[in-house]
Each structure stands twice: as C-alpha cells, then as structure tokens.
Image 1 (cartoon, rainbow, N blue to C red):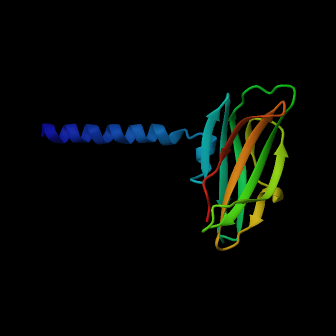
Image 2: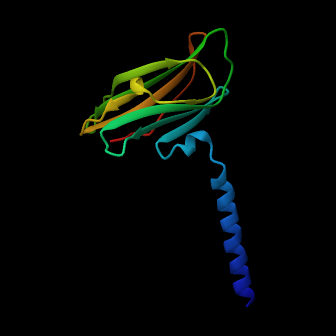
Image 3: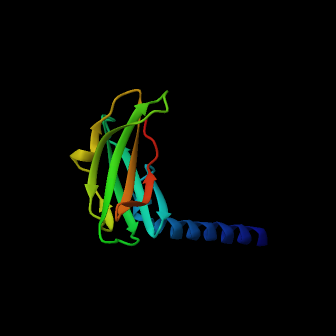
Length: 143
C-alpha cells in the first residue's frame, strides 16, 4: 500500500513538473522544432525555418527574445541558404534587412522560396551594430 502511494506521488510530481515546463515556452520554441535559440552579447535570437503543409515552399522567420546594445546604428539581416543534400556547399537564395526591434520578425515573400527536391535549406540571422556583427545564429536544416 505504501509503495503505491509513493509511486502515485512521484507520477503526480512528474506531471506537474512537465506542465510547468511546457506551459510557458519561449517565443522561439513556441514556433516548433524548426527553431534554434542562441544568446550572445546581450542578444537572444531564435532563428526558425519551416515548410508549408504541401512541402512546396520553405520560409524563415526570426524571434528577437532580448536585445543587447543598439549603438548608433543597428540592423538585422535574415538570409536563407540552399545546397544539395550531398554537398557541403550552400548558396544564399534570399535575404531581408530589418530594424532591431524585439519580438517576431515574420516571414514574407522575401523569406519564402519554392522548395526543390534534393536540396537542403537553412536560415541565418545576424545583428549588426555600428557595422560590427554583434550576434548571429542559424536555424536547423530542412531537406
């Protein structure tokens, strides 16, 4: 009887701990498994990549979770790269420049491309402050 009570208490504790962890995801993880987050120099960037349901387009977006120093000039470059699955070479296929605001930098036609079979895709974002790259990060690959 006592053993059952210990097991029941342990299971309830795990369920509560899991609920606490999953109840408040960061914006970058809330977007799904196609995001990677990296804190660097006071900035926290969540770089995301996804494909549509029909798997015909690939798109990218960025979450700026925290901001570091803005300097006298600050901008963010978001790029997408593509390369064949068998080669290690990637080529830039599209890019966009944004202001350094907090929150979601959503996808648009500049960050959406047709998906080609046999290629892999990756997104990249960099924060540039006073002409120096202050922070950067990549998304996971989509093939």
